[in-house]
Length: 204
Image 1 (tube, rainbow, N blue to C red):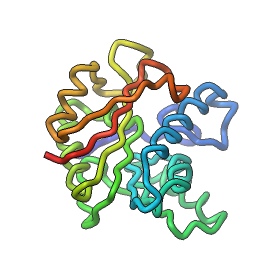
Image 2: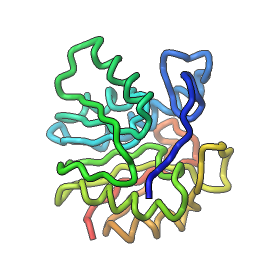
Image 3: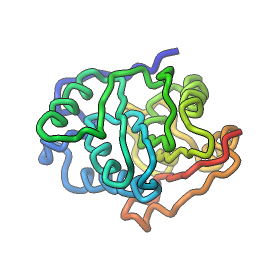
Image 4: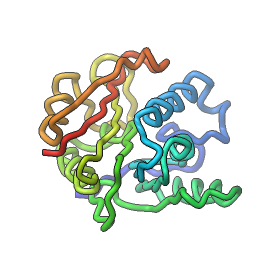
């Protein structure tokens, strides 16, 4: 199965592009940035990280400050072109962007940390298990997954979401792949309380 998302001309509400702040609004931008700052707080300076579903790439820049190197990957060629253009405006030798199928990450590489911010809810339910298996396959032994998703029924949804998880459902889902799943309180990080934020370790 292949993850298919809609494609639009810039900007779009499907993903965030920081060059259009008036289109998204300050609240939306701050919420998106806060989730990546939370993810960055979970990284070690020696970590090699993959940012899965990196979109326009702004989050990869944030987490790069807390780790050794970042690979951003996204199915949208438009988003990757934008991110790469931004990358070329400066010197960032430890950051790379690639176009790729998020549901089948056969990269031939492994990473200490996988960051997955607001991605899994964009997949149909039958694709989510394969997606998670792909993520697990690129995590090094002893590595971990940092993942966020909105809790179903606790906030507004969008036309771009295919299947949102309820809280217990999401924890059960993650525990099929990881021995240890720790959830943080989103409000501690200035993130709305309807988001689930998990750090997962101990591959099964």
